[in-house]
Image 1 (cartoon, rainbow, N blue to C red):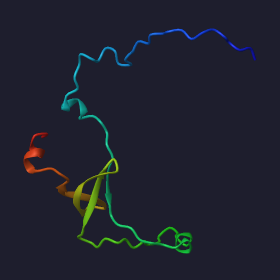
Image 2: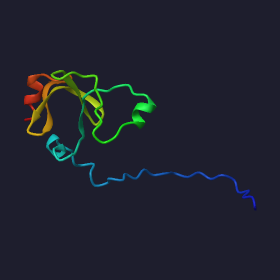
Image 3: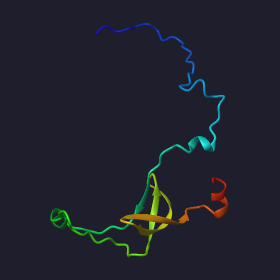
Image 4: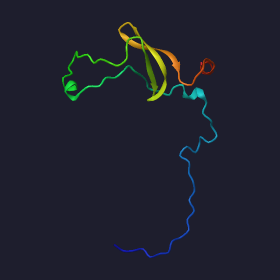
Length: 112
């Protein structure tokens, strides 16, 4: 492999922005209304041995650590969002929001 023995030269780099046409535009809160987020609820957990997991089959019941009527922790993209009450409507589970972390009624009214 041939070596390049030329002395180093000065070079000036220029910065190029990937979104070059957007520096004059500003995003507004309303622009975020279509962003899809994942909301999840922690309904409980239970410790199981490998033997117990291998014995699971269709119809098996896994006991969770939360009791009926307890609040469930809510997460927004895996970040704590608040607490809610699990309710059954028809054949599906839903969560009634009871508390939003760090928010007051006045804070929430601003975004309605």
